[in-house]
Length: 182
Image (cartoon, rainbow, N blue to C red):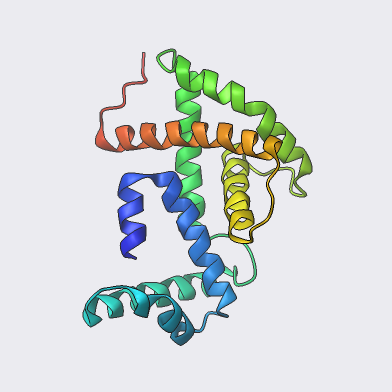
């Protein structure tokens, strides 16, 4: 909860990846809050009342995952809504003549997105979700200590550049200082 709040305010892309990790953590712990408490929450250097708030946050996420039917796979609606909002912003940026740098970065990233989408079983996956899935996959590979090819690292680097720019534009948009209209 504390990490999520901080990331949501600082970097929306990192927030989304963190939330996907939280979803997977809860699945790995079979949604048993006591396991999550002992393995995650209790390790926070926080007073007990804050730990209890964090526990309630996890319990609420578990309830939402049950209600939304994503106990085995998929993402919470709140996380899917982040991607939808970012996609809307992404499309607005691409249409803006004031965003030549963002557009150039997107077109430099596009071949990697197309290649990743061609390998994906679900062909309708949105471009940004494909990007986030690639970053999340890289994170998992690193955690598993797997070797990552130079080609994959180059693709991830380019995708990261795009998402980093998008996250910064998101912050500007949220602050009301993004000027992309003609």
